[in-house]
Image (cartoon, rainbow, N blue to C red):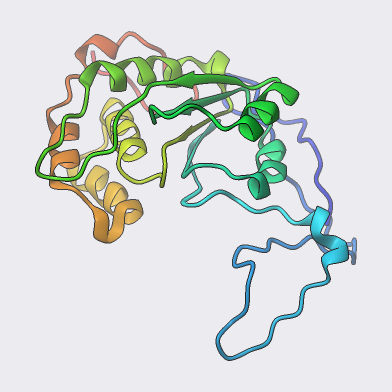
Length: 218
């Protein structure tokens, strides 16, 4: 299996790349997602092929054309992120970016946008409205695509950004909350969902969403 740049363009942004697979190549690419053994079956990996593994970050998913979400990327995820052709990363934590990650984004021409929101647990939660709003402005600018949004685990802070984006895309609240809960799982927070429900999108309605088929509010 091999990776190739697609000649097709994604929506109107023209910046995104897709991954195509050569099924005729018998040296199949592997996605070592578990990186370990099954309890019942002994798994033996040929580490001579380690440089071929593409390991997505924790909680990785595609949000829309040119937009991805995840938990904090580690060294093992860098090769996978390279395949996305990222232009930007939106980082939602206050901690400094690790040196290895800084080196990775510099070497790949990726711009880092940091909107530091402290990690809190209920009931004492204060989600800064302005930080989410500024993150959305970066997210909505197709010149920053392809873009990855991430926090620590890709659950709460990232979930709030994506949830507010879905409001701009006219998703109903039940669908927004379903998506949020799918990533947060047992760690889902009522306060996050309440924040998304009350978030005012009116000041963002003039930012283009040309990467999606969604229409903005009039």
